[in-house]
Image (cartoon, rainbow, N blue to C red):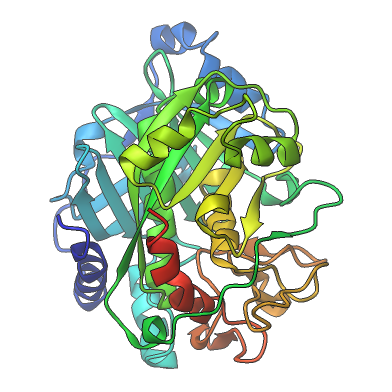
Length: 416
């Protein structure tokens, strides 16, 4: 697959998914209970220990996975997420990455999505942001996220074999940013008017550096990085953002977090004695933007705002990166996207470049902080030209991250 083919594949596959009903016989479930002997072996597993120590994990189960089911040709996956909770997902899109990993994305309530599209028309979002499956297969290891019944589930491969399906309570996730956070802006950079009119997707390459303590908790850093990129690309496609992230490379490093602000400074600095070697790697892999993944649950992440080539850096806690979309959120900051206007430190460079809250339906877009009453983050960027359940997903004056991302994409793609 070429760099420019992915968005077209997403659109065509989604149309096919929504236009036809699945006709094949119901497949066997993707997951089955892990044998007692295998479960006993997994007892001291480092990945399992990290999951059990995660404050936001409220339930988990050990499973065996039939990884071969996650294939480009698979039309339907059946997943038992918890005892008594079995869901059926119709393929939305599936593709193979250059590194051999397979990405499989599906909808749980395809009939409901079709009905919603008929009811609300062309502006209605075609994805099902609260009823979706996204899985990356790397050999026999599966890494993924599922949203079902208003709940978030995370699929992780264990270090010693087998998998864990964990239910996440988003209300217990770390704060989006460190205490006392204020955006760290670069100098103002104007939008490229040509990019606003150009509908061809722009490829932005992302380099991912994973601290060893985070890698130990993740289980499969290759699957993890590809999931983060695939989620971000799905969010862009959902929202009319003409950007495709491409994984430039994923690496591990011996590094201990010194606090988010220090970590961000060290990551971006070229000669302070910390992580300096990354910059040669960045140049060799042509990474436009750079993400350091750490194990620090005090918050979810931090990134420079409205970046130039020298400040296109962010730091993310591994457990927030996928499912909660902090990977895309922090890259959004590099583009210049900001939180919802109700949050501190409004976007003065791009007054329309804020995230959007919809408390009435209890959802928020990727860049928005939580509602006082609690809102699930969905994989959409604010856009007044999109609706979800008939509710507009932004305003032209203050909530249009899609416009900002489209206007900045040419600049960011030229960083390397």
